[in-house]
Amino acid sequence: MSEQKVPRCVEQRIIIKFLVGENVQPSEILQRLKKQYREECLSRTRVFEWCKCFREGRERVENEPHNRRPRTSITPTGWVGLDGDWMGVIHVDFLTEANTINAAYYSALLETEIKEKIRSKRKRGGKRVAFLQDNARPHTAKTTMATISKLKWDLLPHPPYSPDLAPSDFYLFGQLKSHLQGMRFADNDSVIHSVREWICRQPKDFYENGIRMLPGRWKKCIESGGEYFEE
View 1 (tube, one colour):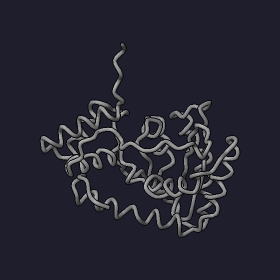
View 2 (view 1 turned 90 degrees about the horizontal axis):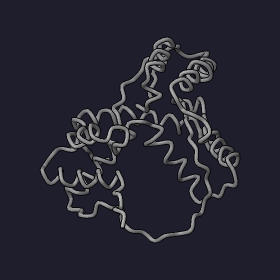
View 3 (view 1 turned 135 degrees about the vertical axis):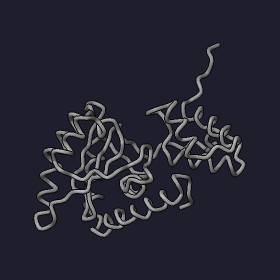
View 4 (view 1 turned 90 degrees about the vertical axis):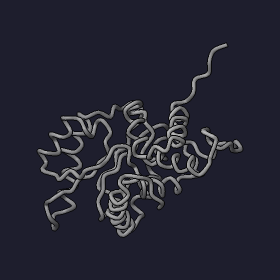
């Protein structure tokens, strides 16, 4: 009989539970997990959430059991990237498994389409660009860093594994997901059409609200010393 392999996420939860029992702080637990699991490490948000659960007495490391239901939506495997500012979405990029997301692709995208769209959108505004991105490998590669430097954009600092400090993650994608929930799609084009339609339908203050939430989250993160805090 072959030995059943423990999923990586459950393996990390076991470690978190043990370290919480040893009174290790969440920020230290996160650093240890990053060192061990690298790109497979749970996000900062997930690590801190599990720390809180185990501190409050949770015993299970597996997800809570739930009743199986038939799938109510059919969505193709793919990736959507969004670039935007307080005025709205600047660029939407849809990629499927057939495409490769690497530094060369990402750098070319910044230097062509996104640069031109920013320039076109800000004809009457200032030229300075404050640029925020996560720490995915294509984003932090030397090629990409050189491109951002060449474009003279101000790259804002962003800690690894911190979707709770990225407006697209903590604000936009959650609401987009709620919009798509329960829908059925026959193909990629149907999904793309629905996503684009939803993005275009949002008023300007929708995107402005998401951006304005960011400084407050930065402040809470700094004041807590990187530790978990209640929303």
